[in-house]
Length: 330
Image (cartoon, one colour):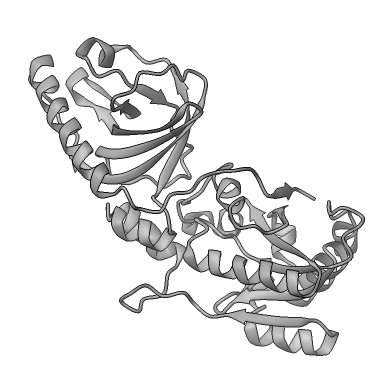
């Protein structure tokens, strides 16, 4: 049964003789992940092999224990966009199923990594584990490599200035708590959300603050607390500073989640375009105003505050998507 699943095509080009592989969910592609990928790329270059990340969709806990599955830092193409900046050769996205979850570590290495993906060397994080019950930890994999003749490199944790290890879990905690500065530092870039621009009710334009309205992300995407934020919008027309209302619109009696972005000093048509919004900092809570005049006065203060915050953040690192890493689902 397992041989049947492992015997399919890998999706790699036929001229790829061998790979240096790392495995993981890589949610967020944070600074620790980026360190692994940089070392993976360098090692593959040194030994004239191709670099390959084997990852999963959905998140393994969505299958194994849905109640414990964390909200995600990167959903849909967000992870692929960031991986495109890593310089690795390939990303293989394996559908994570209960059947795959039942593979013992030895079976996963032999049938999936070595036979399908032509693995010659394995690079893993210090706390990594895969296979049934995550039994394939560093010690097991190093012993397996010694027995089967493949190299296993272990990458130590990347730590923040205060000595804490950087992890997806700690970043989720920071985002959920509204600590965007810590999240940005650990990610190596601002936290962001993407969506397609759709037509809204047109209230913003009538108030003198036209907005682009984004489709909300799926329920698995982690968002900061509701409020008004200074943001940068990456759009097909360029990069613009702005302010975003994330959450309800209580002044108009609307409770559903909204992502409305006013672009500062710009008026461009972006309908049906995909826009990525980077959170720079929180301006205030969302609240109900007595009327349009009070709301407009507050929006003017928000715009001034957003300009100040954006100017102070001018040197912050930002992702520039230049393409996509070769990604495939075998």
